[in-house]
Image (cartoon, rainbow over all chains, first blue to last red; front, side):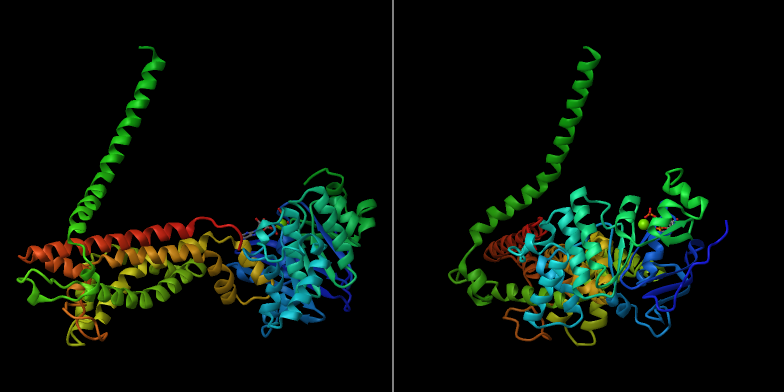
Length: 260
Length: 283
Ligand SMILES: Nc1ncnc2c1ncn2[C@@H]1O[C@H](COP(=O)(O)OP(=O)(O)OP(=O)(O)O)[C@@H](O)[C@H]1O
Ligand SMILES: [Mg+2]
């Protein structure tokens, strides 16, 4: 399999260069180089176990907390290596937020869930908190549904609402990049549509990298799509190109459903 | 008998045998509680919890004093035990749950399990050697240290078990928001597990509140209200032991009544502990 030259422009918002990740001896991500541009939605597709989540989690150093993980290569955020020795992963995560496959609200009120990251970042002023919480909830298209019950538990919301609450929670701290790992895979079509709409809206203000198992979804929301296979980035191109005339045989086989 | 009827019969036989065994198992509990209740009620009086011992009053028969000093002493000793045992135990539990998968964690876990099985009298003797002798005498402090040590394994292991029940997704959510790991543990993980941890603490308190052997040489005995942490201090259990051995029927009655109060308090602690873990609605 020949490797297409993968562009990594220096002005990218984030840039992975020769990135490999190992769990113990097992190589999960192999020499991946790619860039995430400003104001784009970049989708990752590929069969289960090919390393999409692992790669995504290297972009905000979430893999640090797993034992036995080794990361090689570099990841740059605005041109600075986030794996450099003097970089505090906590600060990286404040700039690069994450939304997980399974919604995971804290067992706290709706308001406190969204205010949480702000409180950690040291915001104390009630007025500012209330204002930012409202803005994040509005951005996440949840405000109208919850504005009368901000004091109720976040766990009392429906699955789709919980996921949007988690998105609001991530947005409240105003990250520059948002990583989303199959954020809609547990949701019904209506909730999924809401989240997709939301993603397209968010693109105006930040960069989004999203893992999805739904090609239709990737086609609907992303500008570029990367295909992962067995830890490698096989192909990365404009979403329309990937879905209409991919360069690689493996990509074509995957999107036409011949494997995976 | 048809094979089906035979099976049905065997089924019922086994069920009945199990029920019988279960009843037999709770019978001693019922007997103990019933006996203490019957005996205790007759010795009950306001003076028991309001007055201290009045040795001179025994023969007169009228005023018999009470065990207020022993109840206060037990409260004091258990309080000291909590001050030592709860923070240490919770911290150890956090270590075991969050970082304790390595060798050191295994060793700590094993030690906690061994400590939980050490007879309390041995803990008493050890504290006697290490605290009472250097301090030149038994005290509430020494008693509290002994009970605190006894609380450690229960508190640590329940904390660990409950923290492990908190889903990893909550830890990840807090880390992804830019929370340092220790804060994620303290503010999200521990908070989420707090009701369960509180239950573990209450169960541990209920266990040590009824402890006698470890207090015999550590806290000592006294007939007055505790006034300092470094003086010999009476406790309910030691008083029950002492009064039960005394020849005076008045003392016997007081011992029963004190036992009834103690059992009631322990029962209350256990019931509270169960009530806490009941799933609650919001928040
Ligand atoms: N914590 C871990 N410890 C060891 N191996 C892991 C761990 N997490 C993932 N792996 C392995 O790394 C490889 C890549 O996993 P990853 O979760 O990144 O795949 P994925 O593309 O996200 O799959 P899916 O589409 O099923 O989510 C898999 O072979 C997996 O078994
Ligand atoms: Mg995945």
